[in-house]
Image (cartoon, rainbow, N blue to C red; front, side, top):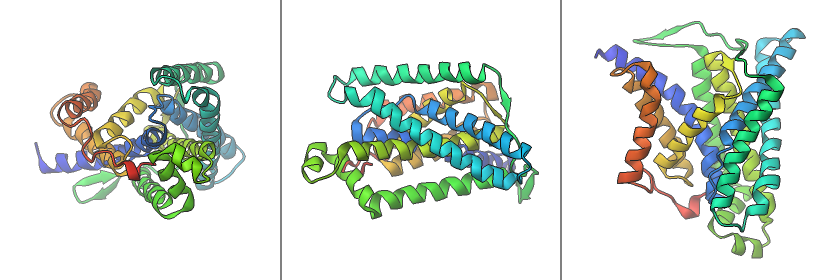
Amino acid sequence: MSMDVLLQQIANGLVVGSVYALVALGYTMVYGILQLINFAHGEIVMIGALTALVTANGLLSAGLPSVLALIISIFVAMVVCAISGVLIERIAYRPLRNAPRLAPLITAIGVSILLQQIAILVFGRNYFSFPELIDKTPIQIGAITVTMNEIVIVVTSVALMAGLIWLVHRTKIGTAMRATAENQKVAGLMGIDINKIIGITFAIGSALGAVAGVMVASNYGQAHYYMGFMLGLKAFTAAVMGGIGNLWGAMIGGLILGLVENVGLIFVRGDYKDIFAFIVLVAVLIFRPQGLVGEKVAERA
């Protein structure tokens, strides 16, 4: 194994890990407040990618520059996904808030399948080419080859994660989120609108998922109805690895998972890349079930 190959795989792992971290934040935010694993979150990512695809193609056909088309497409995808997330919470999860914990879990799986089937009805089963909105010409940085698209993915992910941490720890909404996560009944007695805060949490997590969907579609050049399933499972793995309910844990878990997957490609064929995510998940659950960082109740969001 040469050092150049290792450095290249580390760079690739940081790109993929940034996306995992962004999606994992959606899982960990919802779990922090509702103790619910929102298995439909991967399909929210898919909706974001397909929404951006349709929007970008329409804007490019109208003659808009690619950068402007990208910005507008991401904004539209975030709005659509935020609304979708709020509707899912309102229709599927809120009526089951006091039900046994198995009921909302099964409902989340059902919502995931439902969203996939709706995507099939609207878009079909075909794989769609995502327009090249950012230059993918290789850039040589020492022994590492990257593209501007990959640089934008990492920078955008870091900026959004930093923004979320600021929101949770430095704003009134963030304070209300942390209070709700710690004790909903007490937060309600203090005048916090619990339903509103939970809706905002779903909206923020879904909007971040939309950005992640655009990143994945842009990086791989395609989008399809099933793209959110495996990505969602891996992001969930990242959230569990870091300590589900912990924002920092989700980010660290996503980056570590991306690095493990890509460095592992040095030793095995690409066909077996996905197995690393689940080997890591099993190992964490056996040896450190609270996650690498652990769950901090007072800092959940």
